[in-house]
Image 1: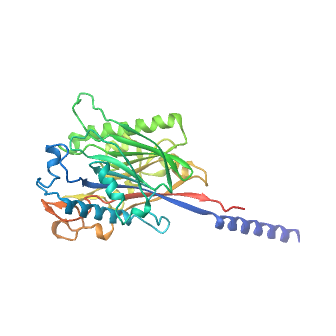
Image 2: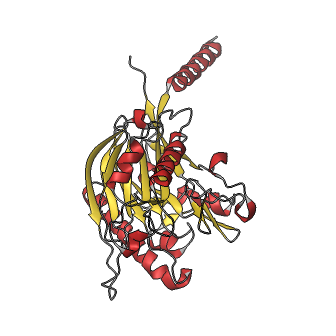
Image 3: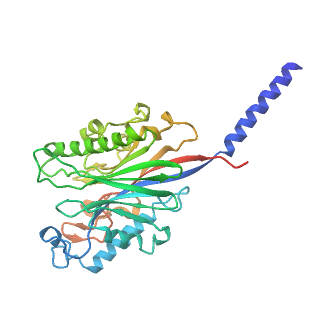
Length: 352
């Protein structure tokens, strides 16, 4: 009789635990990045470098083409939704934008206006006039501050590139910082220019380490068009972003896009028949389940948004991202990069 009683108690305890587990609900947050591929207005603002994207330039960049680009990008962003994030990402880092005005036009497009996305922007010293920026939904992310960090290369004082933007705020109930990047290009060759991206990675790591020195619990995302793949030196060695979550400590980084490229062959841009995955969102280890409590905000999946409508269906470009121009011809596309996104979940306990 005693054994039967103990068995019943055990079963009831197990059922109670299972019922409690079933009651656990999660709030999901998306954090995305999108290279908008030369989102310029039609005004020649800096002479030679901006002439290309003006009505008198080689691309004959006029109001019709500009507003078509805005419409297309807004449509792409409107499709960054899921069953658990019906209002899109909480945060969207962007690159290759000329100024704040083009981002204001983008977020005010009728396809995404109802999200009330807010804009964070800073004018960088890049010679071509492109910057990084950040869009956020104030329902899910509460903006607190922004700092901008210049990349200095010793011995190359005249070198100019995009500043790194660090935006801090509350994502749900977790304070996070998002470092938005567009690292130097591979102009002149990948190996020959690698030192520039390695220096950019060192700067991102320095920003993160400085944050953790004063706030060890801060979650950090390093995102952007890094112009390198996840296993290149800049990302894997200098930034220290590892391929497997189990190898990441609380104050190091995990790169979920490494496996996506090398194990699944999925990329965000293509060149001469080969895929690269430059558009990465790297996650601090303290946002992983391996280094946090069950109720903490935790990363759980990542995606490349290679939707069918974003894919070119023609000729030698078939399967590539459907870009705005190719070989000088206007394609009325979206971008030469696919958007990327990571998802985090936060346990929400029912009120008693």
